[in-house]
Length: 322
Image (cartoon, rainbow, N blue to C red):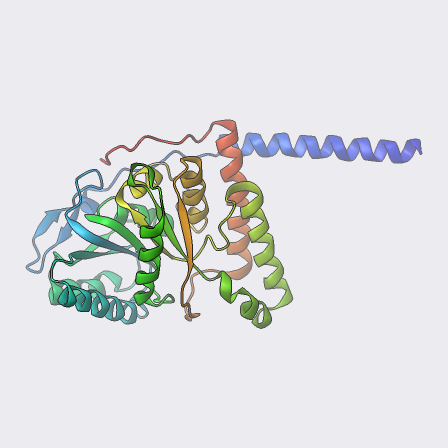
């Protein structure tokens, strides 16, 4: 009996030591919000090749909608998505001439011809409608989305993946859900596309190991960060300009788990969030490496919460980028 008590006490002590070490590591390794830009990232190219300065999210909106598309080595997949998006947006403009929009493709330090491909759409539609922000080095998807969002002019801002996995016309659904949010304090609101309704079918097609990873990730999201949102990772989210400024100004995580921190920040600020089912199709060529990407995201989730608890990270007031 004494032996068992000794083992239990040792395990408790070990767990306490591990927790303390986790807090220390999380605090010491925490990186601060990085809103600085390289000089080249402050400009976009016009159709004639002239450089023009990107506007700031701090400025008043001058377009109804901004679409921010993070792209890393997407020269092959992106044209299908852009063709679909531009057809939808142009049809909407023809149906209502007062509708204004912009698309910002953020090349996240690609090694292929992503920027060249995106610039074809600038030449076709004009730089007032399609702009390309080329990052000098790879920041990660979250960093790319943030830099594009901070350069946008829209009253509302849509984050959309370059692979076109979500049907672009589902913008109507997330837009309606955003409009239905009431009240929206200080006009802040977020509408998330969701694939949760497809989960049963995806489980049937996945291996038991990948299903275990998926449910484990969902549990960590719920336990450490975000409650009430079934699918935090769908890359189709619509923000009011005010909500985008409030949340992206505090965002620290720049890689795959950035969506979770973004929604965690939103819930801390009590920004209302809607979730709506969207059409989604698996597209070949994903940059996620199943085991290691899920493992990294799991670690990020734990550290997100620990870093806010220890005060290493704090919710920031919106500030202009350099």
